[in-house]
Image (spheres, one colour):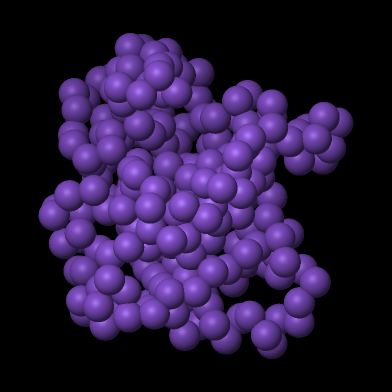
Length: 233
């Protein structure tokens, strides 16, 4: 599996070029499946999911001119025979995973069996947006925020610090974003988060721009920087 981990989707030509490079062909010749599941825990999640599916969300993803597009609803998969959905995963070029609640997404990735299937898909391009990117990392930096939107006392709420671990670093998104919803995403706040995260931590803004590289004094095993693309090796 190849990973394209973004904060805000395919927001500029550089990130679009990275997508095409990973696909090995133009987007117009590629098929994709879109995963909206991650957004449902939030108020208005169903409307936000529909906006993303039809390509009217702020983050460019489904509206890139794909040859074909389908929806993969993770919460439905445990009640469906694997023979009905696994072939579709094998046949698609890209899996587009939306933003939202990392905790909820990781739960359903595991529950559906998709998390176990992904490592065998060598040619699949996994495109993450925000929470869809954090889910691939080693640690859920949004855990406290995420728990506010899942059932209190549930197994989901009790755990969740670890993400799926397809890469060995933690990831913060929406760095220095002007939207009030991301007011805690300043470099200063991200550095404070990184000091308490038990993994190398990177931060990325919505354009994939690289920021200043910082070395922690707290014994953190890595440095704080930004990345535009991550690929599982």
